[in-house]
Image (cartoon, rainbow, N blue to C red; front, side, top):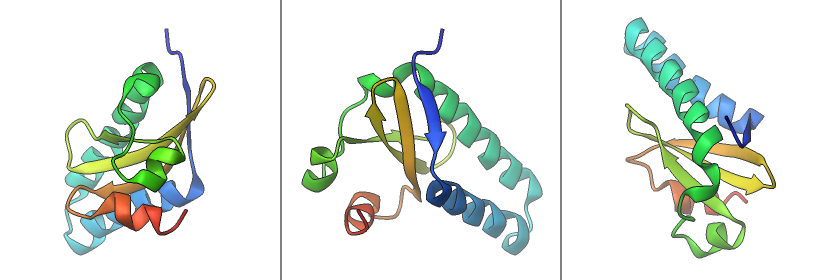
Length: 108
């Protein structure tokens, strides 16, 4: 049974959409775009079960705000999320090559 409800913020969804659009319309790889979308869904479903057990971010400001990273299951992307009760809020999605914690910390 799932123990967390996962909510994806509009900002995180826009970030994911921009990665998918780039893959689909710039790289012209529809299959890879669909695969990334499915991985985001699968990772969100995994988060429903393990959101409370993952380590906090390394960045002091994000740690203070209670943010956790979770890596996509099959792709090199990271979701940054926070837990409030039985809710897990995904607030950002970045590629692993980005300095996501420092970039995101500058925006919260």
